[in-house]
Image (cartoon, rainbow, N blue to C red):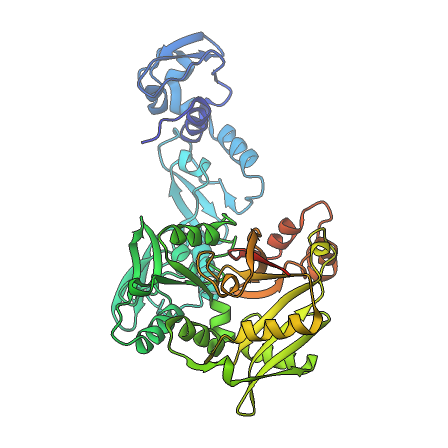
Length: 488
């Protein structure tokens, strides 16, 4: 048990023995622990040496006023001190209150529920009418039930306080115990694995298992990274997939902005390619995510670039294709786009743009490969290389840059270096904002000068992040980008 310090001892003493307030001075007291003697000063008779625990109990005191101890004050003094401590509590009446000492029960009358008996030291500590307490708990329970969005039955749940367990009913597995805090954080019946793999993570795992054939897949492995969990691990392919719930993986619960990056690096040290799947993308772009994963597993339809022809397409056509097939959607800005056509159908698109932001890095290159995507369900073998060569012949650039999201691209093995790019850097993790488990905007949308018009509660003295947190918005960090450069 943790040892009290001097201030904590004095506070606890006055709660238990309020009659000592003003009677004892602690200026000379050197508090070591409860069973080591210390010096207390009686304001009437001077210094006394005794065990702190004895003073707390009212025992072994050789000073008149303190020896009177528990009955050293009268009713009027006690009531006055109580009202000074709890000035807002006007519902208790002390007409029938007879003060004997701090631990002998006396009658207090609640204006709402009538008389009740209680020890004066308990009353002074903030404990009071039991019926009032029950009503407050009922109110807290109603508030808790309103907030709870889970699937479990709360008909037997008795709300005591936020961290105290009570009975919850799982329709499938019966009763179990959980606290309000744990239920509101997403935990639930262990047998249902509500706490553990989420329903969406299971959907992803099941999808991979259905499409991977007889290849071994390990779920929720903690052996590879020394305790860190890999949600889905395919040893024979050296591929791992993390399913990141944007709420639980945001700064609301994870304070380390490098969490995803560090996990990616740990996998890289083990020659494992780690893919991060965001829960909102699994919801909103399920088919695109599935297509990317099938591509990784070598299970998508393969089309060879040599059988395709290059065509130039409009910006609106490129935008529509990217929104339907690229996990990040279309790019903003002025760009030119080329496509690969196969049997009269566009099967891959590449968009090239001028530097989008005016930075020192931007002056170092002329063009940026901003997007490349193949049609959902297909892999165009050699497609990116063929389109890039056509662009080079068409525009004759000297330097091209591209940024590959490390959530999906490996530093050790990637298509960019295979077609002539060189890795020239890595950007820090980027972030977007989530609220209530939904991505609501990029960091650009939440720049500080834009927040006053966006947030209901805004303080100019606070930072962007502080203002956002005060309004329920939290940062979700990715793994950063790999920067690739091609000098021609």
